[in-house]
Amino acid sequence: MQRHISDQVAGRKKGFISKSLCITELICSADMATGVKMGVVCGLYGGAVTNLGSPEQVEKLYVPVTELAFTGMFAMTERGHGSNVRGILTEAHYDPSTQEFVIHTPCENAQKMYIGNAMKGNYAAVFAQLMINGECHGPHCFIVPIRDQNGVMCLGVTAIDMEHKEGLHGVDNGILIFDHVRIPRENLLHKFGSVSADGQYSSPIQSKGSRFNAMLAALTPTRLALTVQAMAAMKLGLIIAVRYSHSRRQFGPKNQDEVKIIEHQTQYLRLMPHLAAVLALTFTTRHTAGLMDEALCQGQDLQSNRPLQALVAGLKAYSTWANVACLQECRECTGGMGFMMENRIPSLKCDSDVFVTFEGDNMVMLQVVVRELLSQYSRQIGKSMVSGLIKSWTSYASDSLRTSFPSFFVDKVGDLSFLLKALSYRERVLQRSLAARLYTKVDKNKEEFFSAWNSCLHHVTGLALAHIHRVTLEQFALAVQECQVNEDQALLKKFCLLHGTSLVYQERGWYLEHNYLSTGASRQIRSQLLELCRSVKDDALKVVSDFNMPPCCIQAPIAGVPNSRAPWGFYPQPESPIPQPQSQQRATSKL
Ligand SMILES: CCCCCCCCCCCCC/C=C/C(=O)SCCNC(=O)CCNC(=O)[C@H](O)C(C)(C)COP(=O)(O)OP(=O)(O)OC[C@H]1O[C@@H](n2cnc3c(N)ncnc32)[C@H](O)[C@@H]1OP(=O)(O)O
Ligand SMILES: Cc1cc2nc3c(=O)[nH]c(=O)nc-3n(C[C@H](O)[C@H](O)[C@H](O)COP(=O)(O)OP(=O)(O)OC[C@H]3O[C@@H](n4cnc5c(N)ncnc54)[C@H](O)[C@@H]3O)c2cc1C
Picture 1 (tube, rainbow, N blue to C red):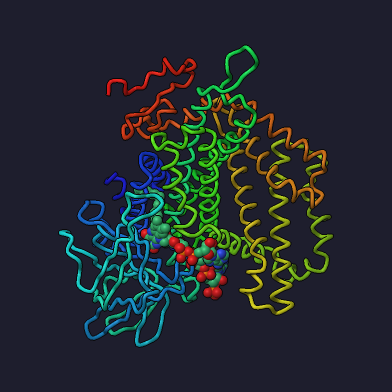
Picture 2: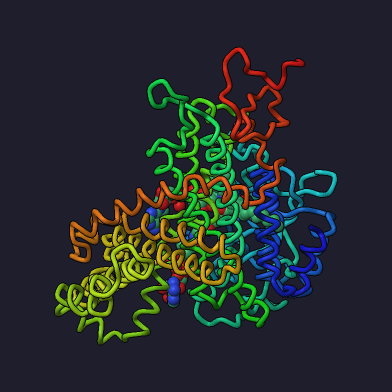
């Protein structure tokens, strides 16, 4: 792990992001809190220093972390501002007489909140408004000493433990308050903004907005890491629920053995789409990590890669919501056993619920996606075309768009090509109609942008998810094509079809409203979904074992893996004979 992190420092060895995501998934599978804590120290504090600092600052402020000399934290969020980082109130005043920055918390709303590792960490990457002679240069990142290696607090710094949370109990989250804390000028991470000894500000990025965006790009790698952490939670939940569904028996034909609960149609209908989704997410995150590795190996900064930032922001939102839905389904599909702490699902739910909020609230992340989609769109067609769009928007959407997606003429309803075109069609219609709506509101009716945008948020979030859905199905389809093992390829193809069918089925109302699906086709999609779920329910055991999750990471007796932290567990082995009450050998009979 240590060598691996120093790779990060040594300028990104080939495939660094892809490799680190494998480590991430494994660490998070073992314990979500450990993953988050490492994410804070390595991903966030480390990411801030390596993405926003100079090589000398990386050497001084991050390499010692890889040598376990000290740890860091990431202090961006404040009591008054979490999503709206531009509005943060912590101040960093430059004092040319001493060539120092004075970090100060001017009011209660400026207190840094929820900060991971706040009660143990030595240094904080603190986001503050950079002030020189009363002029504000926007949020910048400063390295502020919090406590020494003996745990003695630094002068002017107060840390308050926020204590009880829903989950992630292994992470210490706290409040940080700075009372005129002086740090050397060299502690400003100055890749995108620096201050000379006599107080002259300079930046390689002229636009304040783009400079601000560059500051936040440091979050992109950990947002992708969080996507992987959400996938790890989904995989654990599905391993437990699928295995239990293949061992637990309940009800059956008269005078015959009770059937395994996986045989109940509702059981496989509830679980299989989530299994397909986590496979789609697996291939899409690998693709995205590859893009990131490629960019970094070509010496590109993440800051200038808005398409990548948008893709990661969308994946973070989709995966963390998918995880919450998946774990709830797994909890319900395992009945009373799923509610017992020994079987892991409750703690996975509690630990990962917050993933939809931190690292960028999902509703806000979806807007990052659409900002980029609209930016690309207006570059692609130019403003004049958008005005042209408005004139005949309704006919435009229903006629010309459909001709570019003649699915229902050439593709068989439910084929993969049909599903891919359906998802692309929906994304295009939502993108063009949103562009037209905003253009009408802002350019024609001169509405203030915020209120125009706010009144379209339902549309915005729908477009963002439509985009991510389409990307995940495309990446899944590519992975199927590239699969070299025929048996695996055939199985992945069924799950890929299931993922696409499930996505179109979820939005069948929209497709019916837009005359893209006939009522007959909609019924065909539903029948296909039911049949695909049925056809893969037994293959699911192979899929979840192919996750190669080490037993020590599963820790769930109902999945046939003893929980070392809950030795009292009941151990029905998958494929086990039907356990009878008198024969129910508790593994702890020796107690
Ligand atoms: C090795 C082991 C590792 C294990 C890893 C485990 C997993 C990881 C676990 C990590 C631990 C988690 C613990 C939690 C930590 C945290 O929560 S940290 C804090 C996280 N906080 C956030 O993410 C804050 C979210 N907010 C933001 O990201 C931003 O504030 C924002 C909302 C995106 C900014 O919005 P806004 O203020 O509107 O600014 P921008 O949208 O960036 O706009 C700035 C200007 O840029 C223009 N613009 C926007 N988009 C585009 C575009 N696509 N193209 C072109 N231009 C664009 C925009 O118009 C603005 O221009 P101006 O108006 O001219 O300024
Ligand atoms: C366990 C935990 C650990 C954390 N660790 C850290 C850390 O180490 N470092 C750090 O800096 N931060 C950390 N955070 C803070 C986290 O990043 C913020 O909670 C997150 O960014 C959301 O900000 P907020 O809580 O202020 O919610 P708000 O931004 O106030 O959002 C509240 C609600 O308003 C909605 N909303 C806000 N803006 C919009 C909008 N423009 N459009 C639509 N809806 C909107 C949101 O969707 C949400 O439903 C942590 C938080 C938690 C809970």
